[in-house]
Image (cartoon, rainbow, N blue to C red; front, side, top):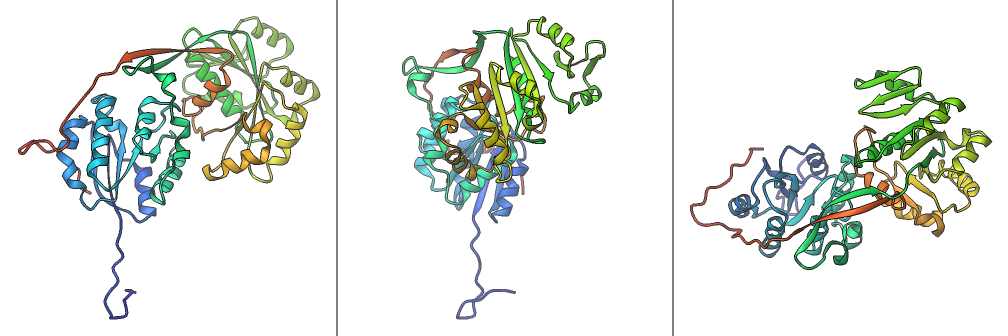
Length: 402
């Protein structure tokens, strides 16, 4: 039924419009915009040189409410300074809201930090599409705020030796070895095993660093890795190797002693459910150099968490990784858990494939500060200028049809 005004004229709802540029179609982005009833006007899908692209398309932003820039469309073909110069000119010339997407980048990323300094707070960085959707919804319903960007703001003293240098790569070197990491969850199916596998994969990608996974629970989950397409099974040692990383099924005391004699840099012990652990296992967990407790934040999950924290008694080497928590619920949870644990609580992203690294590596880096030293590679900045509008007769970039 058509809604009409007092004069009988049909009321036409004004719908907001958006365009986006990316190297590929972004289904998660389009799903959110469809849900919010924001009309897709144009999509551009390719790897572009930022100068040529924006010289040819800026004139098409008239009537556009949101311009979503997925940075992978320009990375590899454009320098950071070029991208920043383009964004500065966009802010000067255009009234549409700018949303920047760079999924999977680490907290403290220099380019994102510089974009935030321009006053563009709608920066979407989670590698997980569901988290990215939550932030995009916020960006188009009121917008993200300065406080939302705090994790990506970088102190100039951290990234600059002077105005002409910046960090381009982080390298880690070991400062301690033979470290035991105990991982447990407050109840089943909250992700202790997933975190353990993800962590051991992150540790092994650090140059000259070795880490192994040791199953220290009765769930027998690791045996299922035998069916993994790239696995190599050594039944005698109770070991499954995937991508040169060793996963040990629950070993007896003799086998465990042999594993520990192998002299890995890091031993990642998966204790499973804390409430199912024996007293001996709990004592072993407490003695770990680094303890990670995985929990949920729902009302029916917090009792077990509180009970575990009472036993751990503010242990300085214990950290909480909270799973399956919406962005808007996180601050309330940290406030409710108390100041002692709030600073040691981190919210992890969903990890459908634990063998693949995601944004949780940012958390791992913080937890392993006592054991890994971060060294930085720096490069000189170069100044860059270009004409955003281009010249008459410039070749225009083709756009895909919707």
